Structure formats: C-alpha cells, structure tokens
Length: 133
Image (cartoon, rainbow, N blue to C red; front, side, top):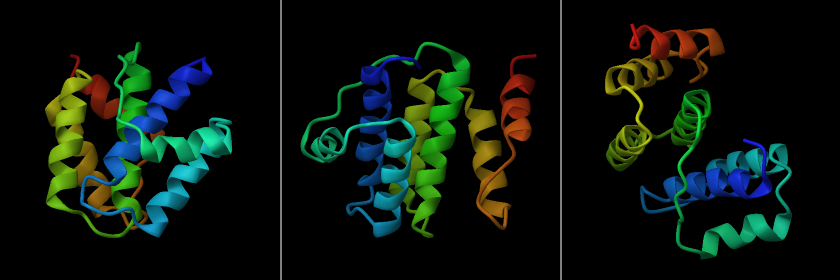
C-alpha cells in the first residue's frame, strides 16, 4: 500500500464497517483516528470519509488483504461488543477479498478468546498460510 489514495480507500472501508451495527462508538472513532494518523491521512480527508459513499478498490496483495482483515477485526472488537451484523459483514468482506473462510473464522475465534482481543502477527500469518497448503 503505497499511495495516499490506497490508504484513503482502506480507511473508507473501515469507516463503512464501523457503522454496520447502526452507530459509531467513541472507541471505534478513536481507533479510526489512530489508523488515519498512522496512514498520515489529512484530518479534513478523514472527516470527509464519514460523509461519502464507500468506494471499493481491489487490494493487490494477499498480505495487504490479511492486514486489512485484521484491522477490521480489531475495529470490530474496539467497542467491547460483538454485534451479529459486524460478524456477518466482516465475513462477507473477507470472502470478497478472497480470504479463506476457515482461516478468518479461526482468527476471529482466537481474538474472541484472547484477553487483549489481539493475536500475534506470526499467528495471523500462520493461520492464513496453513490454508494455502
């Protein structure tokens, strides 16, 4: 992910996902702002994402798709409540990205069981690589 537009597109997908349960929680907004800062997204561009229709662009590499899936999963857990709509939406997004449904399910379950709601990068990559063999 090199360009500003690609980063903006990933963040737009996250913004759309954050309101799939019907509301934007403060912790979700904080998480999105943190990602926007990490991506070096202009504050006005970040605010604008909440007022536009989502536009989808294909994420080129599998590693980038796994990263985006994990960012969405972290966002899903950020408000402390797992909504059924979020679970359905993340599954649909992952399928659309071409990710293995069994690997996604395993990662989400591990995150649910984790005390921090996170998994290690090694575990994340290992789960998706196992499914390739």
